Image (cartoon, rainbow, N blue to C red):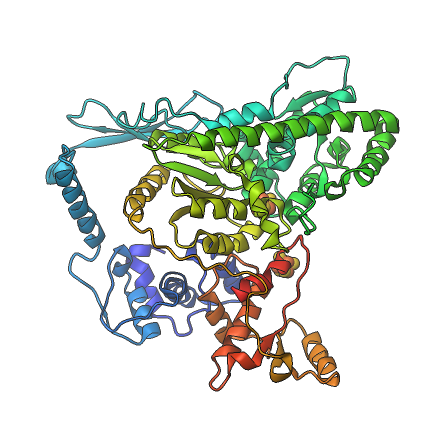
Length: 639
Ligand code: SF4
Ligand code: SF4
């Protein structure tokens, strides 16, 4: 159906619009398919979409803000009469549409640009209103300068000497006036990569077997010194897959058997590339948890998708290729005897190495890894001690496998350097000094601990701002984003999510907009930090309270009854309804898992019931120690 001509008409003919919720319509394909398979008519599907646009806007943009009585609706969507009608129906108020509604935003931007040009005595590049009448042509070609092979569009405008280009992943075809900006700004991400790969040589000795290490996730971006040394010491060649490129991404998407996050998806393509190359084996370890400092009480477990990527990759391969994967089960949190046993059990059995030889390889690997980590910290101290005062410094927050891979972050670092700002890697910050698990004793994801420690440093360091880079479908980030926001205590930062569908177009504009917004933020120095700390709540005695269990299954009724038999006044909350979910969605981002949204809604609804005194209420939400998100529910709900 044509969006412009048919959508509105058809939606207004809906008798029972489908209940499609408040997800962004871009992500609604599977819901639409499900309704269609149940026989819901086109009119009702389209009508449901009109409502979901409205619900999404109200839940995600308006959120807790008050909706006034004089409402203007502007922008291109206003053309869709069904969406206007849905807004009126949902708000119960008249929606006014101003003249020139489809260009009011552009007019505002033009006024701001004119003021900016005047204030800064710049030369305008405005081409005049007749530009639309100037003939132009658009064609496309494939850039062959690297393996990405981007499709570049070329716009030739009559009378202009140079064409415009867009569509590349890098800056090669960018506008001339952006080129050369940022000259002399160091690229600390390349520097970190150099330290990570120090001593690695791609030379292959044909008399030895070769182990391939996929260039992704923590196995490469955080632990490469360890694994490359370990395999070298055992007498293998080590081969790393190529940098992620468009082919890796395309191949990965053709292989995946389950939808995961982007970094896990690309591990498929990297593994495939190594299997196709001279590698005899590909190292895809099942690393359950990570090493920890003595004062860290958590299980320090990796996210479920880091843990299980080897099994997803395995499932995507034909039977005969699976034999080539090396997948030991490793509990790095218990480094020492436990990991020694795991390594000996696996590599001893598979290749016949003695315990002594494996232990010797582990010892050297450990030494190289420790040296790498210490060098990163040392470089970080040097960089932090000499931060420039005349330039914006942005700490790039995120996992090293995202922030260190230009294909996964759409060349974020290069783009920022071209904006004349200095990006620095998260692990150049003195994260270890924050002892973050003292306040987050159930932040069991190691990279989550680092992200929160970084937030704390950036929030109080006037020289720093943050770009928080994550991925759609990242489970840990759906919670960390809330905690990060809280830690930043009002200091502005940019949050960016990238996946395989993310396009380069517009990224530079977003960075420019963020940097522009920082100019104003410098004036606000009176930020107030309000971070929830466990144990800091004042509570009335339990005997005066009713303990409510959220409905998660019928066991909630049983547990409440058991508590009552012990003299605790307790009840199970009812099964969640749309009311609970709508309430919860005002406080959540829709990225959290559903049980968390449902239980949050139950609690909120109870608290909002007339006559309920919050001081007389307790809610039951258990803790646990990872790796899934459940252990974060209680902290989020308290916040
Ligand atoms: S932490 Fe997030 S981005 Fe990393 S593997 Fe897990 S889900 Fe993916
Ligand atoms: S709490 Fe449940 S739904 Fe949420 S991540 Fe864990 S297993 Fe998945």
